[in-house]
Amino acid sequence: MEMKFLRFVDFSQLNNWNVKQYLNTNLLKSQFKIEFLSEHLIEQNNKIKPFDFPDEDFAILGVDNKVGIFDAYVSKGKEIKQPYKKMETGFIAYNPYRINVGSIGLKTAKHQHQYISPAYVVFSCQATLLPEYLFLVFKTNFYNRIIRDNTTGSVRQNLSFDNLVKMQIPLPDINTQEALVQAYQDKITKADELGKQANQIDNDIEHYLFEQLGIEIQQTPKAQIGKLRFVNFRDLNLWGVTSQNAITAETIFKSNQFKNEPITTFFEINPTTQIPKNQIISFIPMANISDIYGEISVHDKKTLKPNYTKFKENDLIWAKITPCMENGKSAVATNLENGFGFGSTEFHVLRARNNDFSIYLLHLLLRTKHLRKIATQYFTGSSGQQRVPKTFLETLTLPVLSLETQTQITNYIQAQKQRQKSYLATAAALRLGALTEFEQAIFSNKSNCFFVN
Image (cartoon, rainbow, N blue to C red; front, side, top):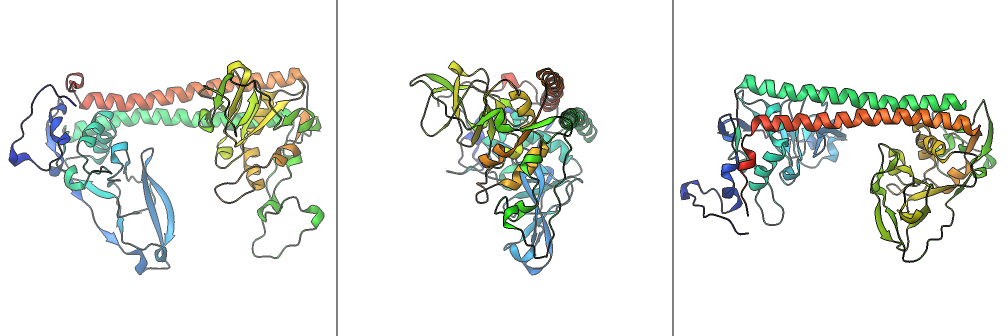
């Protein structure tokens, strides 16, 4: 990497031999004073030995780069083989090997758990520094570059607490910190409210769909615990113990208002698909299916490869493996390159035999939470590789209604989904804008600070 200038560092300021730490020290510019974190942070190493209390429950926290700190799990003391750090409200914890990708979190009053692995660095803030303010500084894209410049290590870069406190941040007075955090939080609150409204639309759609089709939602009966039960062989649908209480697939979409027909009257399940050789077609791996909207988010283009699931225009592809099925990864395949596509082997494919039942209405039914919850009781396979078998789909029945009624239902729901998309897009923009505005308020002259290589 060729630099445009030669940089000198006083030996008295040489903390380690990592060159990158000294290249970008002039990047940090702000309208606020710049101070070292060493003046404002306290490392927290208060530990408890859970194994000394073998029969007690210990509520463990985790940290990731999406939500930050979260309540992870509860474990007996005898199952924990090392001392764990105790987290108080207002403490910050980060993974020293993953902080460069945002793995840091702030413990708030909403978190019920209070212990965390000793692998995490834990610290608190002095009264001069709001932990909420510092956490937001760490989450900005600009400061993430500074974090990366201060990590050390040959193979796995990490940020120790000793190196953390040698870093600097812009530090306004406490009242300004509070105002900046509040401005950020106001936008996040609005985004969260829009998210709740978007989730409610999903619930409203499901209620409307079942009401229009005359389908009564059945409740799975609770299994009797601690009792020996006998099941007649003729009543044995599946070999799984939990499956004996499952709602039968035939009745999930049984209508009290319309005539019912087997799904196979209208659709083929996993049909054979012939695709011309050496033709460029759409490639749709599982990752290209949105579990939020139930649609294909990205169309890649490739020639057909062996050992993939094949489908064609207007087929419905439906994830059969956990957790993709539970998350609603399914879509009607439209706008396929040359009318064909291929993708994950973990898709079931449903294809219309005729025009009597809308593929879009079928998709709405197969994405309902009610169907997905019941489908888990029909899983086959070992833990982590469980799948919904083809026979589950083949056993479903569908209400028979006019095409006009089907169109009215799908059009109404599509309008609601567009409203949901608008809410989610606005919420995403608010979240992005909240952090961007915070970053712009803290850091100044950023466009003039980056070195040109």
